[in-house]
Length: 538
Image (cartoon, rainbow, N blue to C red; front, side, top):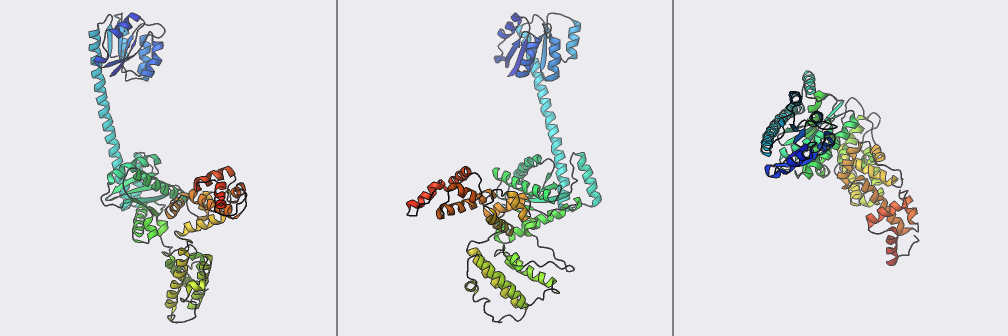
């Protein structure tokens, strides 16, 4: 249906137009009428008709003034002027305003229908031209995007020289894209299934990329997608990279694109080194796929999570105590930590004599401390590995190292079997910090992030992947566990317990407690009383 609006100060004309044409049967809808241009104009703005039929001489705002205003704000409207005056001046003004038809009164319904049908053809022709124009524009946009993506893909995968890099940055600026930045990193997205539809993945990530305001650029390869991320600093780009990776995986999950892993490469400061970040992202994925279980389980993993600490033969490293290395280690990485400790001692040989007895002493002290902190008896746990002073197998340093590995394996296995310190070292460090500070009502997520020295996005991703829950839920669970303990073992009131576990608002504490436990604090305490426990005051 094409919408028609009629403006004429003669009611007889308006009624004749309204009643003598079967509008709907002819494919039209009469959406409004008015006696003059001043009344008509706001109605036309609301109704947005396709065709305007107007008298030329009316009080207040005449047809010429109305046409001028309509043409200014709604140029697509087809205009038909009805006039009782065969005036050349009127006709000339109408032509200058782009009026499509100028008709003299009186006009028959058949004549008007013929004009309307002619206007419909004109509208349809304009619509087709607009559609063709929009298709051409879209093809140009798609072509430009394809060129842009090919350029970025070449930079990521093949690398460029300094001269080529400057030319590319200049060329991309002509597309309205600024690739000059302080920091760069590459994220590789790869599906676990060989039959994954990367075309669908690409389309979904393009929508996400367009919301990143020229800080992320997508490119595709054979069986994977890459994202080039730009940032202002080390912290800023890490934040951007992990945020985009997390949002991308959420988007792909919602689109049903299957299991996809995001591997984040090293950060580089030079445009010409972007390919190095890409190689680092691939290496990160390979390590994660072929390494121990904790890495295999993560869907987002960065080069920082798998890289080895670079060593220099010319520069002695500061020796970190063995306990500091082992207190957050797990069965998957304790060997690497121990060997790194031995290598550190070798570089400091001038200060610390590296022999079997020194290593044996350090390992035993560390193992004792780990086992005691986990609530165990070191002699029972370690016996008979090294508690006796037998020298069997200790002919050289390698023998002491072999024995040291056996001792640390027992100690850490005991700790893990007793539910103490599992998972990623940074996450374990955060857990310890939370255990010591959860009673602080002003404790924030940023406090923990600063303590472990990571970006908030990186830590948030790592923490949830390692623990299986968000930071907020972990902290609430920690506080609620302590609250249940206090409700069971003390006579403290609920309000006192709220303050004791880190909440300044007792009502909010009670709300969270019921949400987590299914009962109120008083109901929880009463449950023990009914079971034969001594009731506590609440």
